[in-house]
Length: 341
Image 1 (cartoon, one colour):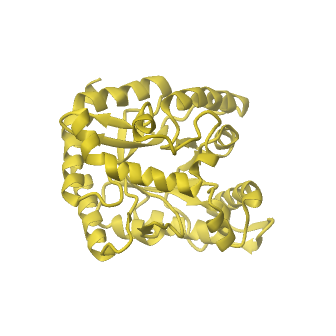
Image 2: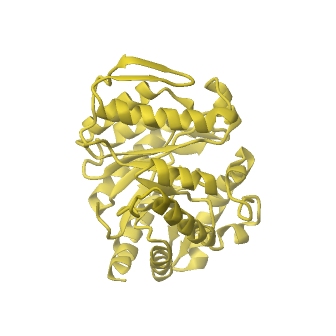
Image 3: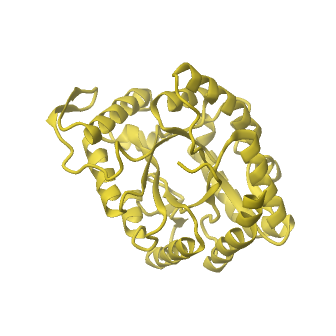
């Protein structure tokens, strides 16, 4: 995989209640076409259910539709809440998407952290790690073996065969999302790479990269050539202008994360998303002028080795014109500075 910095676009596809979701989808399709033209490397969408206070387009149909608008980018299922699902379904859905995309799918997987989702799918937080590990093992086997016999805690594969295999061999890249230290050790053991979350402060990530390296060493695995991270990113002519434009929307999104209990999934000492906005953005998000954001990206890369930056540049309620300007400004003024640096 490439080691030069790559830049991906996170499309949350979340919008305020009452918004016209057909109109918002047309705007997302326009963003995808522009990202494709401007040379972005990937488009990502996450998975959540019961997403109040937001409306939310569902990951699988959304990404399979959006790939038609952006034929050159990789399509990142980042992240599938794997503990909620059954492995045969996930294996066939993701393999289908890989075929439709021409072999450009990334399979991201994580535990999830919201009771409303676990209960709706007939499971619990207590069962999530076991289900996650069983499901991931089964999905890999279904992608790489002709038939699979495996008894899990919540499924039985008896001579089961995935009715479609992925284009990528042996399978699409597996990115494991993780916040807390035990989850990072699990990502080292089970994934092709740890997919760094957008919430933890950068000093926390620097500490956790050391933990990740040690865990890889213990498992006899090399540090991944492609090391991805999600970050909230916003660039404008100045830092004050960037905060003026993105602040209300970014703050509202993190108030929702705090209410959802995201902090409980984060490591001790960096698990309060209810702090004031000035403290929230400090050492956490990449915000400022083109020079400032490029330097922040380079600093992150040098400190951690992160080289595929999946950027959220839109939050619920933000105007389409602002997002399109942002995509241009990043591609035309920030990415060249990072590549030169």
